[in-house]
Image (cartoon, rainbow, N blue to C red; front, side, top):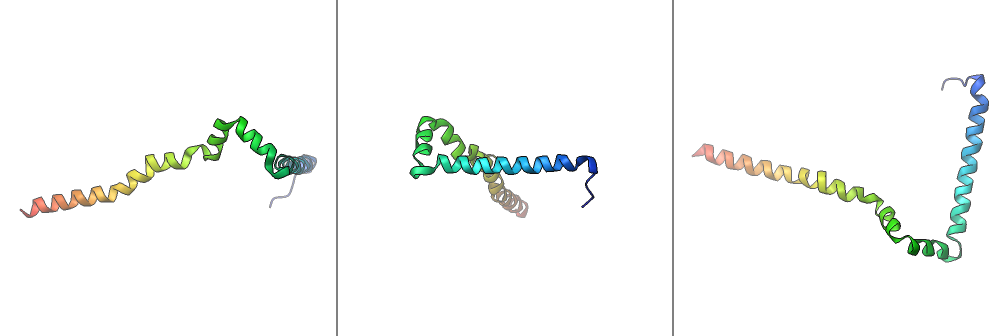
Length: 93
């Protein structure tokens, strides 16, 4: 790795400490949120059901990909083989 420029050393330290503090706050927040058998989390899920459905479905990216790319590509070999067989059969006549 290239050496750190002396003028950026304090900047790197600040970013390091800030990222560790943010990570620790996130872990503490999650522990608080899911404490007591997840009662707070369940209340939040019930209050924000449409948002929960969207986020738990991962924005439905997988389903969209499957519909727009996966199925058409999966059908392509079948369509090609049918066209090839039909073309070959007509050429043999």
